[in-house]
Image 1 (cartoon, helix red, strand yellow):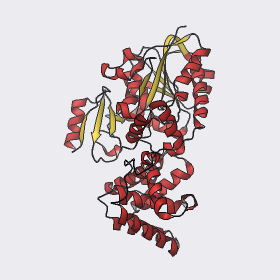
Image 2 (cartoon, one colour; image 1 turned 180 degrees about the vertical axis):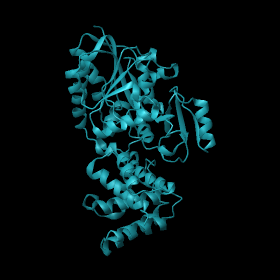
Image 3 (tube, one colour; image 1 turned 45 degrees about the horizontal axis):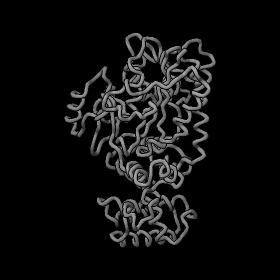
Image 4 (cartoon, helix red, strand yellow; image 1 turned 90 degrees about the horizontal axis):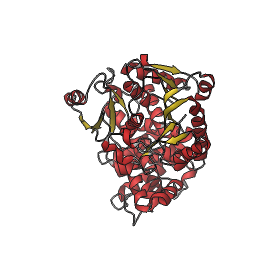
Length: 451
């Protein structure tokens, strides 16, 4: 029997809330496990999951106004089922309220919930449906508490308001709550912009060249799964935001010597660097996590760069301890809070805590200190995060420079395309913020070893 998309959405939301696992990982695992082949059902699952996560605080406010029952005392199944139902009622005009309500009751009954509970849920949802035209939307600041309408946690809103001001914070949150387009980075060894756009047009997909990153393409409208896009199997592209695509360009022309990617992950920037290598040059990619290492190799193979890259399945500490050589170029795309990519990963706002920043900062400083001895004299080290927060960005660099006088900041401006140079600040750091750039939030510093 086919899996109900609403049941699957609720299961993903429950697992994400209880285990803190990345939603895109849960989504892929659950869609694969349930073999959900119908593209419409897959889209509904994604719309429900990502919509609920983006508007969770507002949905909970509406729920609390009608439930007269503490939300924290609700069972996870009930709470997530109500959030999914309310999101459909308030945000998804193409789904009749009756369908949203009836399907919710059916799935709770199928989960053997008591009759009093299904009766409570039924009455509550019908009351919200009856009042929905009178309910203020999240943008009605005079009727909805400001923080509720922005649907971000208090600690984050307070930090951003102090740093950016009230209006800019609102615009940043609104950008985070707007579904972003799918961005691809083309593989120049196998295609070019004109040919790839023609391929998409033949498939009925609306797309255009990116405005900032040289090999980027922006896709619009309803789309199939990434692996079903034209050219995926042939290695014509990699999914990657334009901001992330700019970071490998900070090296400028790469030297013939080996390049080190100290935190390779799934290979977004690794594959990009591999495509930029001069003939005969090699790249060493460090990735200790077994599953990520497998995905890294798969991506390198699909794009045709696996022969240029040596994958090291250990941590940077172990590799640095045993390494007998130095590199003229090092990329350190460190683990971080991810607070710059909330628009693509909306669960991050609910998973992170203020205390996490100190944890990430300590890890990032340690990684940077490990990588420093591996950089050759006159070499370039690019430090990067997908965080908006100073503790993970300039504070890490400042502390590092205090203890490494043989390193200095080299401005990012000269190596970037002219259109992207506006994203370099007065200190020479590269920085994008979603509400100002239309890209995800990234930070990068270009460090030179004077040797």
